Length: 189
Image 1 (cartoon, one colour):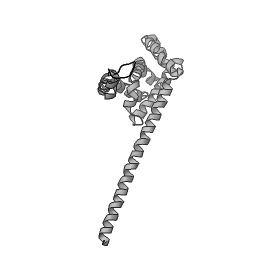
Image 2: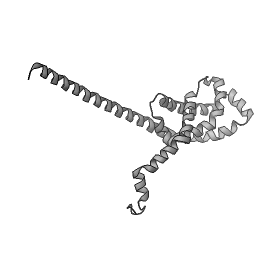
Image 3: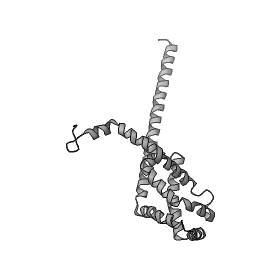
Image 4: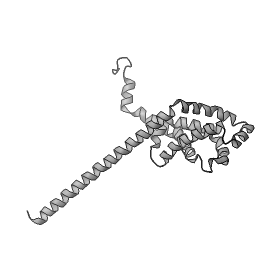
């Protein structure tokens, strides 16, 4: 072999090694991103399932009813240090944190919405009328905007995307096989 052929083989081998290394690095990055997303999702699941958060979510139903009273709205707007303001701010901060992660692609919107789009929409529907009042009393002009964005996207997902997801599940051969199996024996009928 002459030196030109050896140089060509060495260049090709180097190129192949670089390509394989780049491919492996991209796979590792994808793996790390998925692991991070799952950690964020599981943290959301843990936090939303706490007794305090469940109590706060139930509180939003009563809060929505009280917001219908014009006198209460005035009281809520003036009392920025009150219990209702504290609870309102707490639940907004909770959803704002995860909304920000969805917006910057820290967690997949699809992953969060598949199970929790309805909950996010429900909480938003219960408290959205309080945002103009809270923004005028210290929450700031942009307070809760990420949560608002998340809620609108969750409503869209619940109305449109969930139907496609359920249709996709119905076409999944694993689900079809389970549906045709005898529920007692697990064997096909």
